[in-house]
Amino acid sequence: MVNCRKCKHFYITWDARFPNGCKSYGIRSKYNPAFEVLRVTGKGCLCFHEKKIKRIIRTNN
Ligand code: SF4
Image (cartoon, rainbow, N blue to C red; front, side, top):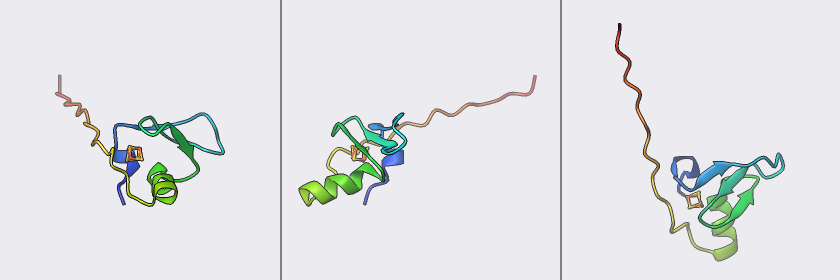
């Protein structure tokens, strides 16, 4: 099972009942959106795209 929090399509919604959103599938879920994809389609998510993490490099001035 993929970790949606590492996917660029994942976002946090404003709906407290369904806080986990997926822009790719257009769904909001109480849990990891990939669980919903698996439950409905019977297959794992095929749209996972790893998020690039910006690293902030601090210098001592
Ligand atoms: S595309 Fe797949 S891995 Fe990414 S947020 Fe949606 S369900 Fe999760």
